[in-house]
Each structure stands twice: as C-alpha cells, then as structure tokens.
Length: 323
Length: 257
Ligand SMILES: Cc1cc2nc3c(=O)[nH]c(=O)nc-3n(C[C@H](O)[C@@H](O)[C@H](O)COP(=O)(O)OP(=O)(O)OC[C@H]3O[C@@H](n4cnc5c(N)ncnc54)[C@H](O)[C@@H]3O)c2cc1C
Ligand SMILES: Cc1cc2nc3c(=O)[nH]c(=O)nc-3n(C[C@H](O)[C@H](O)[C@H](O)COP(=O)(O)OP(=O)(O)OC[C@H]3O[C@@H](n4cnc5c(N)ncnc54)[C@H](O)[C@@H]3O)c2cc1C
Image (cartoon, rainbow over all chains, first blue to last red; front, side):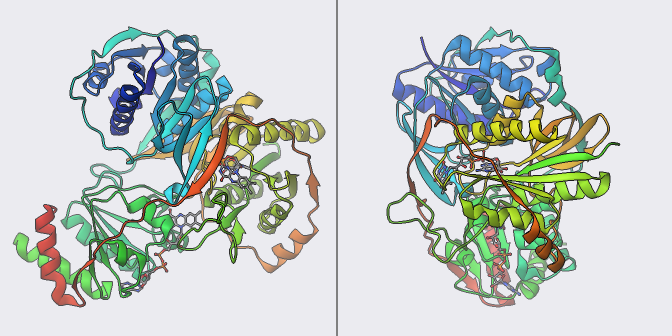
C-alpha cells in the first residue's frame, strides 16, 4: 500500500525540531488522504524512531550506512531516491530547511521528478498546492503532475504537535546501495563559532537597522540582548554597510527567527525583512516614524529615537533585576 | 595552480520595493515602475567568481536563461569583472525548474565541448523570485558533479574545493573534488559596486547566444496571490525615555526578563 513518507532531518543522531513540523503536517495530510504515515531516518537509530512514533509515524525506515553517519546531500538524496523507488509513497515531505530542501532536490534530480519547495497549504491528493515565493512575501498556487509528489513545507508554516494517538514507530531497516564516491559531499569538519543561544533559537532578538547608524552604535543593543538572554539581529541595509556580519541578518536572504519577543530598532520593516521576522510571537518596534511598516505591523511600539530609548530600557531592566 | 575557468548562473528578477504587487491576471509580479536585478545570493556568486579569478588567474563566464532584456544583468556582472556572457533567450516564457535545469545543463555541455570544462560552477542558493531551491542541484546531477548548496565560504585548491556552510552555531566544512558545483548564499562576500571603467568595459563584452530547448516538467503555475497581511492594533507605549517602564512591564508580562 502506498503511503506518506516524511524525511527526518537530523544532525549527529538528534532530530531537528523542524522535522516535528513536517511530521505534524504529514500526519494531518495522511489522515485526510487515508494513507499510512511513514518516516525515513539517515544513520544509526538513536531513539528517533520512537520520537517519530510520538508524532504518528507507523513505520520508520532506518537507513544505516557508513556514508550516512554524518550529513552529505548526495548520499542522503540518493538514499531517499532509492527508498522512494522501493516503497512507492504517494507523497514525500520534508521541512523546507537548508538540508530539507537540498535532500529533496537531490532525490528529485535522481528520480527526474518535480519538487515543490516551501508549501503552505496542500490539497488532498496533492494535485494543487500553495507555496512561497520571494521568501514568503508572495504565494504561488501550483499544479503538480507526478507519480510521486515530492514537497517541502515552509518553515514555521505549521505548528508541531504530538499525535493524539501515537504511531507504532516500528523500525524497518533500509539498506541503500551507495557508491563510495558519494563521500565527496559528506561533511568533513565542523567549526563552532558560538555556544549557547543562536539567532534562530534565541528567546529574544534585539534587531538593529539602518537607523542604528554605525557599527559602534550596536554596543547598547548588545548589552540589552545580553541582559535578556537574547541575540542581536539586523537588516540587510546593515550587512551591506559592513556594520554587522551577515550571520546576524534576518529576512529572505538571512535567518528566519521565531523568538518570544523581537525588538526591532530603526528597521522600516520591508517585506523581505518582515518574512524573516513574522514568526516572532511578539514584536516591539522602536522607530521615529509612526508610518513605518514595522510599527504598523508590531503589537507594541515606541515612537522615539532608539539612541536614547535603548539605554533607558536597559537602565530600567537593570533596576528591576537589582543590578 | 593552473588558471581557473568559472561559470556563474544568474536569473533576472524584478527589484521590488517594500511591498510586492501582482498583475490583475494574477500571473506575474507587477513590474510597472520597477527595475530588475538578480538575487543577492547570485550577486555574491558573481563577486566570488571575480575574486577567485583575481586570486588564481583564468576566466569567468556568466550565463542566464530568460528574456532578451536579461542582457542587462549579464552586463552588470561584466561591469564588476566577469569576462564572458551567455544569454539563453527563451522569450521570457514561464519555465518550470526541471525544464530550466535541462536547458541550462545542455548549454553547459555545449559550452564545455567548445572551450573546455569549467573547474567551478556557481549557482545562487535559491532564486529571489520563485525560489525553487533546485536548479543548481539538478544541473550538477546531470553533469555528474559534486554539489553542495548554502555555501558562504570557498577556497579553491589544486585538487579540491573547500566549501563552508553556515549552520546554527558555526559552520560545516565540505571538501569537493574538482570540477565542482556550489550553491552560494549572501554573506559569502560583500559585492563591490561597478566602477565607471567597469561599466564602460562591460559595454564591449560580447553576449554569446545559446538557444534553449527542453520539455516542460511536472510543475506548473496556476496563479500568484498575496499572503494574508498581519493587521495589528499597535499599542504605542510612548514617545520618549519615560516609556521605558512600560516597555519593561511588557518584558515581565511576556516572561522574557
Ligand atoms: C517572466 C517569467 C516569469 C516566471 N514566473 C514564474 C512563476 O511565477 N512561478 C514559477 O514557479 N516559475 C516562474 N518562472 C519560471 C522560473 O522563474 C524558472 O526560472 C524556474 O522555475 C527556475 O526555478 P527557480 O527560479 O525556482 O530556481 P532555483 O532553483 O531557486 O534557483 C537556484 C539557482 O539556479 C540558477 N537559476 C535559476 N533559474 C535560472 C535562470 N533562468 N537562468 C540562469 N540561472 C538560473 C540561479 O543561480 C539560482 O540562484 C518564470 C519565468 C519567467 C521567465
Ligand atoms: C531579493 C531581496 C532580498 C532581501 N533580503 C533581505 C533580508 O534578508 N533582510 C533584510 O533586512 N532586508 C532584505 N532585503 C532588503 C529590504 O528590501 C530593505 O532594503 C531592508 O530591509 C531595509 O533595511 P532597514 O529597515 O534597516 O533600512 P531602512 O528601510 O532605511 O529603514 C530605517 C528605519 O530606521 C528608522 N530610524 C532612523 N533613525 C532612527 C532613530 N534614530 N531611531 C529610531 N528609528 C530610526 C527609520 O524611520 C526607518 O524606518 C532584500 C531585498 C531584496 C530585493
């Protein structure tokens, strides 16, 4: 019988939180299509089968192979292509992360099938779906004609939730036939540059835009972020000026953030920035312009000069923390 | 090290303002009053190619599939230092990612049979507009070459290309044998602006034409739509430093203090 197959993204044995979104979406889709929900894991089983079961997966194909013990887009994509050929799922789903999109595209290239990236809505039968363009600034309705429908879901488009009735999470070994040459795109090393919270996981992000004015003027933003256990983010105007590294950029061509609170200082809120910030649970805009998009879209705003506001806020935080 | 041959792939896209509007037939971005550009990722790929040629010597080529007007993007790339340009004029038709990749793969084979292999082919991580995240991967597979997407650091050595991909807490390192294909992200470098001299020189670069041909793939556009906009009753907490207390009250309420 055919199925819905979820591609589990993992790093060194740990499931990526984004896979919970893919599993949740796929479970709802499988239920409406009357299909079983299965998953595929790359590398040795490390508890991820049971975790996938919690989200409703019935069978979990475990592709354990020396070439899969660390990430490699070609080996992972080839494995997925072989699993699709052998198990003939109706739909294959990953989350539209860097790895999720890359592995699906690798499999699609090998199977010569279409691949629809970053869906926000999928009709039952998957003959039509809505996907993001321009990083989410625009949506596109597409029709899809393929024996197996390969798609990824846009990150943060579906909330993850465990299944009301868990699946069996039954382990089924899957042995891909992989040529040694595929080691050519396997991760060979890692450089760790930061520890602790990162921009994409920080509970608070203090963002600074062109209004900050210079590289030096980020010091007060750094201090406030530190006090709140958060990180500093920025807009593209800022990275273009060389004030901050690109790894701090929020938006279409930067990082997508989803903190409890985003404090956007001196950022106008252009759509390409907004799409990276809109998953924030709460937004506080600090801007001199009451008409700025960021202000009109935020839940809260201070209409003032960030250069005086941020130190005042920091002083108040310190006072209440007894610092 | 022998001189390098590098190919960079760019796509002409509208340069939207703070908001993107669509045409009445819901098929296209409304480009009235808009200029055109390429993705920031592709700008960095172009700059990366120019820097690698400056460092190692050799020749760089830029290729686009699109309308005749895409010559503008090719000349822009030439103005910052790319040596050769190829235009695949498809009359500005709507080509899906599979078809685009097939046509580009054919063209690369043709170019390589005429003037020798490219040591490195650079794509953007994803195009700025339709963002399919796949054309480079499909082309690399077709050419039988290693490909990693999402790259923010490139070093070319005699026998390999060392590429870095940014992840949450640092970066992953890949070592690809040459010839290799990479999908590049913004942040690889800070692209230079064209100089007057560069602009003048770019006018003289010959644009080579390669006719594209490929069958449609399995994905087709039905229509474009705008996402539901967040409408928020913005609560204004103040207009000067006296708002600090209200701001920190909000922090407490949200549990982030
Ligand atoms: C006028 C016009 C309107 C279009 N409208 C739509 C639309 O609304 N929806 C839709 O799905 N498709 C549309 N297309 C087709 C689409 O834009 C294609 O180019 C195709 O879908 C490529 O996929 P992608 O842009 O998602 O590329 P991705 O896979 O995201 O691109 C990755 C990289 O591949 C390279 N690349 C991609 N396309 C080209 C190219 N044409 N020339 C050179 N290098 C390229 C770039 O380096 C890019 O960064 C349109 C095409 C045209 C000409
Ligand atoms: C394909 C594409 C991809 C893009 N990707 C991204 C992306 O990933 N991320 C991104 O950010 N942008 C991106 N952009 C660029 C985006 O369109 C905007 O140009 C950019 O976000 C503007 O940055 P900004 O808000 O800092 O600057 P501006 O738009 O110049 O806004 C500055 C703001 O600061 C306010 N201000 C000034 N002084 C003060 C002060 N003293 N106190 C308080 N407020 C003050 C002003 O009122 C204004 O609202 C992309 C664009 C394109 C075309």
